[in-house]
View 1 (cartoon, one colour):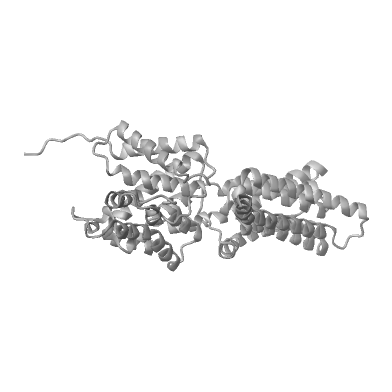
View 2 (view 1 turned 60 degrees about the horizontal axis):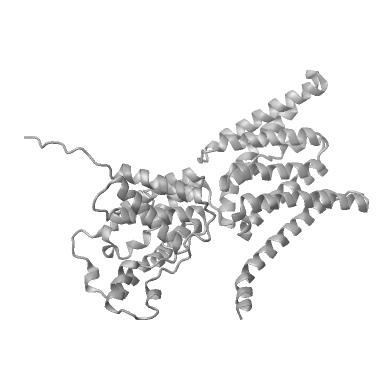
Length: 465
């Protein structure tokens, strides 16, 4: 019976892995067809092409498995990566077959790192670029010059976009790619021929066109966000503006919860920076994680203006249900305001499957020994499944608990942070998160430092007479 249960539990994971492998195999087959299209080659040459393409995709799979495992966990993310490679290889084949000369340099390969960098990071962008141009090199007349120029230009595109998430930056990137192509072309031509007469002005026009075509990243980013449910840093910046309608609504109707969210955002963003998580995603998720409290703000202590709590008139189960429902209410509200799923994940996971312990303890004191009572006081989850959602869960619990300290000392703050995160760990809230012991230690250090700064002792100034 246990074996059957285990098999059922693992089935979805096996099915997902199988689907990912099928995507890779289909992509390999498509690339082999593209590389050998309209070529009269022998069976051995066809087999050699298949071997080379398979090895390239195997390296890509191993890279994702070891460094970007979260991509392999979501089929649409894997499909997005493979589709980007296929599109540019198909364009390369069409341009190579239908044109002559250096027209291949009109194809904006730098768009690949621009798009990948927008949704992921520089390492991923560089790796996908390398795989694509190496495979494309089999279809162009001067593969070495093509790979060198495309690689260097792609790296320049990555460097000019790093840590700058405004879309206007793309114009600068386009200019730098044009400049890089032009300088490399001039240098390679002089190196090979030692004659300026071999430098053709028409090729510089192609490089200018290449740079101009990089601007298609604008609509492509929007399309990929919509079709693949991805989220760019530019969108996160926009959502993180506290003048957004939903955040203004939170500030107006639940001001205490809004201030709490701001403090959580400050704590979580610094923790994300230290361990190398997505800072913008963490900050935006922190700002939205408690929007469900808009529904019944008076039932949350941070929004209560006097010492009389409305929970005093309710039994513990009803109180717990009201508190726990802010997660469900938040998800519904976020969907109504068209908030991306990546941000909604923070609303769903910031309490994981923890217990609303205050009301649970109160209920147990009144109904001691009742079996199964804990279920009514447990948040529905899911538990955090990424570094970013785990950081926000920690920051939320630590920031809320810090308000209950009677004295703000370094020892008291340190003990609080250690205790809160230890309890969450023991509850298994981070069992699905790729956090190391060092990551958790660094996060706790950041929380202690920031809370000590927030609650530092001030000098008591004498009253003015």
